[in-house]
Length: 235
Image 1 (cartoon, helix red, strand yellow):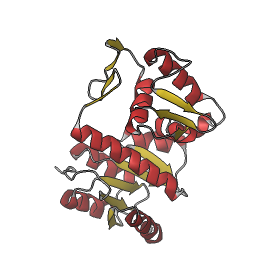
Image 2 (image 1 turned 180 degrees about the horizontal axis):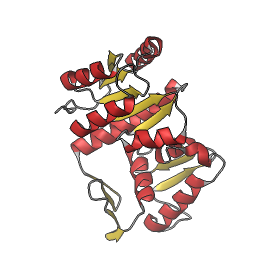
Image 3 (image 1 turned 135 degrees about the horizontal axis):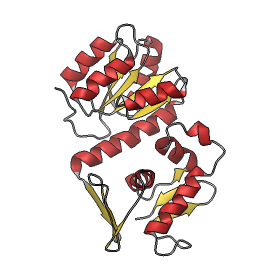
Image 4 (image 1 turned 90 degrees about the vertical axis):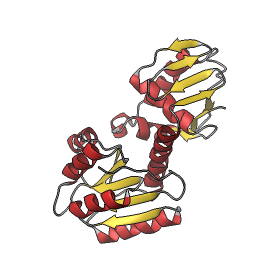
């Protein structure tokens, strides 16, 4: 059995499993500039072996590997570890995305992708993972969020949230006082957000969440609108 035991921080270790050496080197260079330690493997079996020996904090996993299919690699890793996994692939079909997420991946990025987008997704997942390692609960201004049980208490009363509403609140509190764009929120909560590209999905769910946790939805205490950009969780 292998699992990540290193503290998650700016110097986290990331394992890249991809048989395209040019892409791997490009990813490595950018990640190292961001302060990460980077390990590389060019096939599935080497990737599994490296993960067992080095216990990385996060894995970037390509689906099209020369020996084991990336889905199989993900399944093996997930049976033995909770290390966060982001799938990188040129497969853009919805069925492939669903399969990747169902086999235990934490996120899915389609090639070609912007490194800024990949970097943001890595940061989000590492923050979430760090939080679960350190504590199971977040408390601020009469609001308590228990990550393990999914319980939310606001001003002393239990609030029942849908799974999506809980994930939305969880995302917002992960970045206190940081402005998150609607596009970023959509990409994190709705994996296939291109299906909702022209909808008001984020705004609608924010409104529903506010009705449940805010005392005054016209003057929100927690989820603040940043005009023309998105939302932030005020602390």
